[in-house]
Image (tube, rainbow, N blue to C red):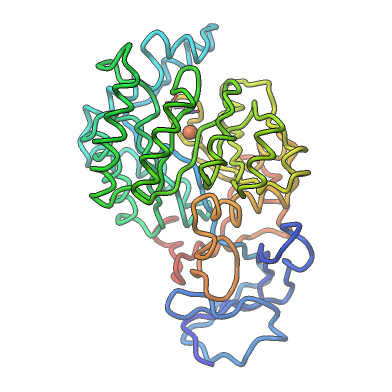
Length: 412
Ligand code: DI6
Ligand code: FE
């Protein structure tokens, strides 16, 4: 059988199959992967492989191959930074106090509105490159710092442009319901009107929106307002996700699950009813340990209960200037294990198969299976646990996106 490329002498963590995400059947010693036209033809034991005639063969010398990593929750596109607020917090101010005093998300909004699309792309590229250098092949990028129709669309165009500038799959998420812009002070329902009837339809009609998100929180929007945003998304045929139960329990996860959400994210204050609703709907629980760490949160997400209910768990960086200025998905995995007591298997599934599902991409990427995009991360490690165990180390050997090695581009 002919193929374009063949990776041989590899050890595979395919992340495929049912049940425990990283069980024995997902591990292949003496593995090969064959790809043609950017798709996986075969990933499994060399002993069982068809006789491939490859245009190019790559010797992996026993290295481990995982699916390319997926960062399924980021606010990668934004202008400026919030180092000053970090200093205020070190001096004792809380995130909510800073937000209520006109800082927080609104301060990034001002900088983002003032930036051109090209400036947004330029400032996001080093963050994107840091993630790609760790084997990320798919990334979600949210709007939410423009908070006008044009500024939100500018952010989403910048996100799309990042996907052109680098060899990476970008999924955009419309998050205009992130914070109340000052021009609507005291009138949040009118802002939600604008989000639902003007901003979202315009961005969606321009092809800029892959999913719709909101910040359901005391300092964000109410469940009723969130439900209106979800209705508008449904009318446009767009999937939804939600920032839920980060600072308090407004039962956002239940609302999201009832709307068939791809994911509910953060979830420190999630309760049993929320977990049951997510389990019924198949909604992914995206945990964001970088935000937990950076805000010095003490309320842990209910990991044991999520596990018991078989809710799929994803892990993401939440890369944003206010609560998670983090551009390492490997460190997010380490934090997921250290802070949330996730297992190595859960951490790996959280940045591959379950992250794909959180983006509606389960059929496209996230496991090493025939038919999927040939997105690979090839690692110089002895065992996959090293990917989770090390702090600020990067054992990536080669990143492969759609069958093409991109190591020279991203690591040069
Ligand atoms: N939750 C978060 O952690 C980020 N957004 C959200 O809804 C914070 C965004 C920021 O502070 O800039
Ligand atoms: Fe976020």
